[in-house]
Image (tube, rainbow, N blue to C red; front, side):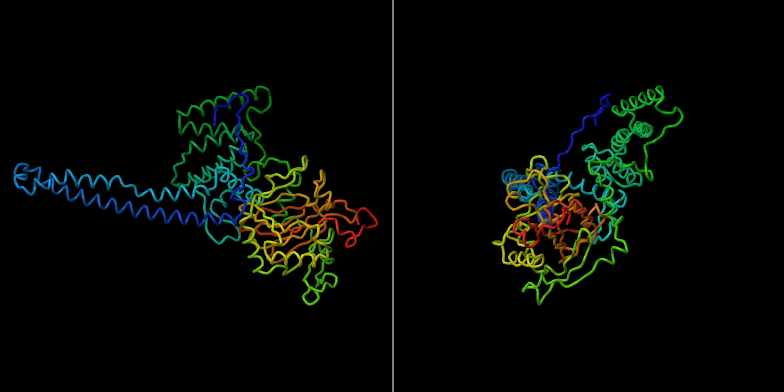
Amino acid sequence: MRYLTSSFILMSVFCWFKTKAEFFTSIGQMTDLIFTEKDLVNSLKEYIKAEESKMSKIKRWAEKLEALTSTSTSDPEGYLGHPVNAYKLVKRMNTDWQELERIVLQDPADGFINNLTVQKQYFPSEEDEAGAAKALMRLQDTYKLDPDSISKGKLPGVKHSAFLTAEDCFDMGKIAYNDGDYYHTVLWMQQALKQIDEGEDTDISKSEVLDYLSYSVFQLGDLFRAIELTRRLIALDPTHERAGGNLHYFEALLEKEQHEGKVNKTAFEEPKTVSGIYERPPDYLPEREVYEALCRGEGVKMTNRRQKRLHCRYQDGNRNPRLLLAPIKEEDEWDSPHIVRHYDVLSHEEIETIKELAKPKLARATVRDPKTGVLTVAHYRVSKSAWLEEEDSAVIVRVNQRIEDITGLTAKTAELLQIANYGVGGQYEPHFDFSRRPFDSNLRTDGNRVATYLAYMSDVPAGGATVFPDFGAAIWPKKGTAVFWYNLFKSGEGDYRTRHAACPVLVGSKWVANKWFHERGQEFIRPCGLTEVD
């Protein structure tokens, strides 16, 4: 933080999505950190044991020599009159004290430090920590969780307890502050202050929290509260130079606005709040509220009339020989556009094999830049993905063939099987699977993505739904099932209703497999309709 000026403050914004693959985007890879930490704990315990052994030896030396010197110093000449004592004194000074010096200079920490140095290359970075904090904030916003519930670990479907200390909450607030996100700064600094007020033992002082909080509420337009909080800060720390400067600036600004008639001299209209919480600022995503409501299971437009049009059936892939004796169970999830779910398309054994094949290849998922057509990482897609080829395993051959049989589409121009793992707050905000412009060379050859086959390879205790904001559908992950829809009309035009999103994972780990079919080769399987929107 710095002094306020008329141009306010210059913020250093974290660019937490770079080309490196962050740990927090994949639970599959974060599990490695658990075992790394366990190894470090064992190494630390060995160091403590060695340090205790060393101190025990030194202590025994000290106790023995203390008794000896107590006797020798009481009558030095008499003590040395005994030739054995004279010999042992010379021996101790020449040999034994040097041995003690060697013991003292031994550093049992070497083994632990060496292990730590090796493991640190796999540690998450500051960038990863910021990303994990922002993932928590994303969950907070999407699922309308208050900081107190998150701090106490009160989340639906959790198996293990967890909590945030006042220092954790303070660090969350600082990360938001450094990103220019004053809305979340206020929420988390208020939570840190609450926990300190409740008597939590912490090294974080109230004045540190109030320093960030007072400026952040000012940035949100609450001038009166900024003045009140700054006065509290000065009462705690009268020598706080920055707070004094800020208070002078706030009061001068208030006086100026009162003089210009911008605020009433006896009353001040505070920024709009809901239950005492400042209103969340709008962002770049127009359907944010609809999308997040669907993620919470709210606003789903499944009417009784629509429900009656949905059916379930056995599907044999138009009498495909491989499905005649074992047809697939198919259920309608939505009527228009038509979305179906297939059951038991992947076995547990196949899922585990696919996950193990994918883990070494997982890398930060990318999207195509709409302006340049170049693949790049983006803050609205937070996951890790891998592409599996049929040469990787017979399981991939079998799964690809099964998907081709079920859909009836040819996979000759389809993309490789993509495996994605969504970790802490992992999501993919509303997007189209089909490409618009510019097309890359592959699309010019194989055509656009005509259809999506999305298989769920894990159950998700909370969150992680696939939602369609345009028509209000929410589809929840079920392990071993898959959903299928067409992205293009039969004319080849994009069906803009299919804009969809992968909701943030609130609790658990979400694994999916995607198969995207392209237009070329489907001409006689799915011929053009009579109108543009058939």
